[in-house]
Length: 342
Image (cartoon, rainbow, N blue to C red; front, top):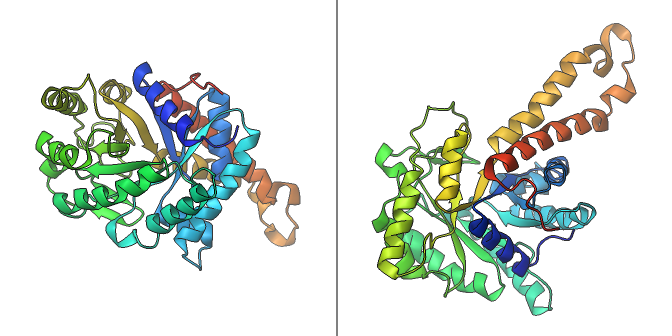
């Protein structure tokens, strides 16, 4: 199926919220990982989101080039073309963009989509994230307020982060106090006062409830997904809306228990980022392949190896399939398994 139109993406998110499930959003950095996501989503019968970070976009552009806007556009063009061959709908998103990367990443991509829309076509990306978690909250919200009208004009969605996700992802690191890892209602209220609740443009919010990027074992971080429900109720009470007025995103979920994920989804999470676990699934399968086929992938003791075994397509297919299995697992955890309308 073609990549989602803006209306299809909005309908996907609305359906997730109404149906009590969330879409997995997978970080990719190569054509192989794009296909792994599409393969897994297809086998799961789930729609989903494919996203790229600043570092991933740098890699798409070429490891010696570091032209991230170019890399992001190349990612989007490739994904848009190959997605047509898979029977699921996906949306394209750019992940964590800190302040110092705005001018070289998100802003040029918005400008490229503005050109597309002026020509009567759809935006290149269906959503973009502005990650203002490293700047003061007032500045975070002010920049979001400046971006939101441009996003609305191209019928795209803005993702914001209100709070601090610990750990590190693609060079964006936070080493704050434990209290900083939990968003408060006062924080959210400031954002709502500035950004509205959809009338100024649609946005989705990553609130933090103890989340940490990277690798940790279950129990290693104290997650409080019930906090999301408390904030939703407070926003609803103050602004007179229905239940769960905010569209929420779950960052830093590696190692989370199924119960923690389920509670977060029940409290309004409609998008959950997946990166560390799929990276490991991809690489772990390659390591296994190489160890099992040592004499074939290397020219040992003057031999010639086995071209059919060391052909990158051979181990690449193994890696894609292994990652696809982790993609399927994510759809089961989030409830999007079997929910595709494609």
